[in-house]
Image (cartoon, rainbow, N blue to C red; front, side):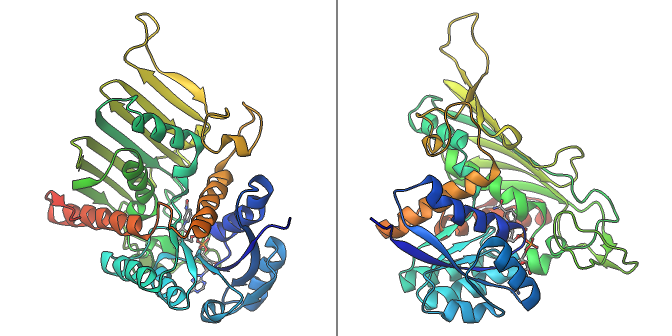
Length: 386
Ligand SMILES: NC(=O)c1ccc[n+]([C@@H]2O[C@H](COP(=O)([O-])OP(=O)(O)OC[C@H]3O[C@@H](n4cnc5c(N)ncnc54)[C@H](O)[C@@H]3O)[C@@H](O)[C@H]2O)c1
C-alpha cells in the first residue's frame, strides 16, 4: 500500500537547509510508520542559487519570495531555516495560511515575538515544532527515560557546557550571528538555547537565573559573500559586534535542582562540545555530543569496588530510536538527531498534536534567554514567569 504523503516547503537552504533536506529525504527510508515527506518547494532570494540548491538537494520546485511559498495550496508544512530575525514574520504568515510549521531555534528575537508566534499557531489550529535536535539523540532520550523511572533519584545538579571556537580569530567576519538585530543574542541564543532545552527536557522548568556575558572581540571585518560558520573575508572595513561571545549563568529549577551553564565560541579546541552531567541522589548521567552514541552512567547502589561511571553505547533495541537504524554498535551521527525529530513531527501531524519541543517550549526557552540577558546587564538574579 502506498504511504500517505505530506508536502514540505522550506525557506533557506544553507547549513540547516541542507540538514533538514537530508532528514526529510532519509526519514521514510528508516521509518515506515508515518507520513512520507515530499520535498515540494524551496524558497530563497537569489534565483540562480535557489535553483542550484533545489537541484542538489532534490526539491521539486522553487520560489524566490517566501511569501509565495507560504501561499501555495500544495504546501502542507513550512520549514523555517533562515536567520532568527525572520522566524516570527514567516511563522505567523504560515500559520495564517493554515500550514504546519517547523522552526529553527531560537524561536524569535524576543519573548514578545515568540509569544505572537505561539498565539498564531494556536489561533489557526496548526501543528508546530522547534528544532532542538539534541534531545533526539538516542543517548539523551535514554537519559530522560532513566530520570523518569527514578533511577537517578532526586536531581541535585545539572552542569551543561556548550563550547565552540569558530570565531576566536579576530579576522573572522561579522556574520549575521554576531549582529543582535538579526540573531537576538550571541552564544546565548545560538548554542546556550540548546542547553536550556536539554535542561528543561531532562530536569524541569528553570525558575530563576543569574548570568554574566562577555564580548571579547568588539569589532570585526564586514562579511563577504559567505555568512556560515567557516566564512572568510578580505574586507578592510570593520563593524561593531553587538552580541555576546560567551555567557555563563547559574540557574534554579522549580524542583529544587541547581544548574550551572556555560556557552561560548571562545573555548579553543572545542569544535562543537555540547555536554552535560546530571547528578541525583541515586546516580548520575553524563553526555557529550562529540561522542553522542554513548551515555555515561553511575549508580550509587553498584557493589563496593565496582562503583564508578561506565559508558553505555546506546545502540541496542532498548534505546529510543536505535532500532530504526543499524545493529548494536553500528553508530549513528548528528544528522540522525534531525531525522528523529522530524519523525516525531510527522507522527504529531498524524495524531493532530504538536510534539515537544514545540512553540510553547520555544516561548519558555526564550524567557530563560531574556532573563539571562537582563540578569547580566542588571547584575542581579531574575525570575522567570510561568
Ligand atoms: N538546530 C541546530 O542545531 C542549528 C544549527 C545551526 C543553525 N540553526 C538555526 O538555523 C537557522 C539558520 O541557520 P544556518 O546556520 O542554516 O544559517 P545560514 O546562514 O547557513 O543559512 C541561512 C539561509 O537563510 C537564507 N536567508 C537569509 N535571510 C533570508 C530572508 N530574509 N529570506 C529568505 N531567506 C533568507 C540565506 O540565504 C540562507 O539560505 C538559524 O535560526 C539558526 O539559529 C540551528
